[in-house]
Length: 152
Image (cartoon, rainbow, N blue to C red):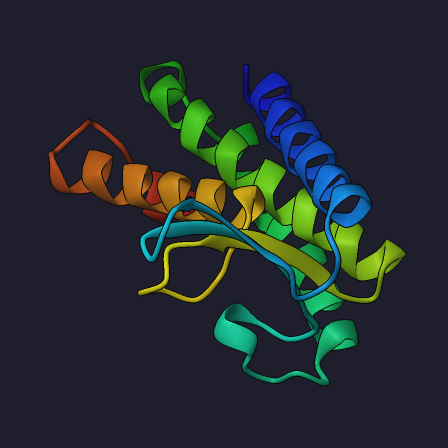
């Protein structure tokens, strides 16, 4: 399930970015709900919210480190912790989607624009959902040692 989820997120991210790049002009904004939600095509060479705009190579390295960490965590899950496959798959797929952009384009394509938050993409969304799920599972007291797996 982990790898299927990761590949699904990766392909969803890549396909939607390809649609945006091929159907929109850079900087173009298409209102879906005026002043609430738009598709706005921008590129980001830095990290979240455009910080460190010259850091593409650094973020490529960080992405590879993230992939190693996520796959290592997945491989150390016990059967009782199987529910972590979904959020870890979300995170891996998101990392792969943005990494693909950084390597192929030299920048990340973003397009979801809620006007009250920086513009983002599916990869960002799934990374945040995955991290939130892990946080909630851990807080809600599931029998997990996910945060301690590297001590094994």
